[in-house]
Length: 91
Image 1 (tube, rainbow, N blue to C red):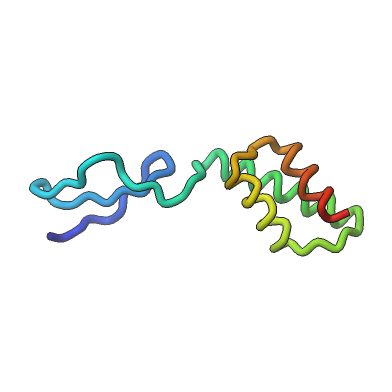
Image 2 (cartoon, rainbow, N blue to C red; image 1 turned 60 degrees about the vertical axis):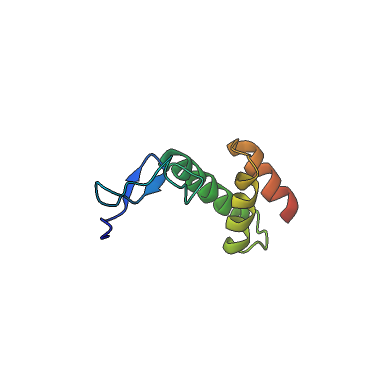
């Protein structure tokens, strides 16, 4: 069986086989965020990084990214709550 190129659809990566051997059920989700959520998280990250620099906080960009995605992985999507939580931990 030869697999075709992965097909991206709505935040889900699906791989289809030939017509005689289709995958059954929904495609496997390989990442939990859709493009709109990633754009929003990017804006949140930029804002937090900018504010941390303006406030002279010693907070590495890698740490900010890790904290934001840890919170988002646990369901937090509110930009203000993400910002407050990450900056509060740095203060």
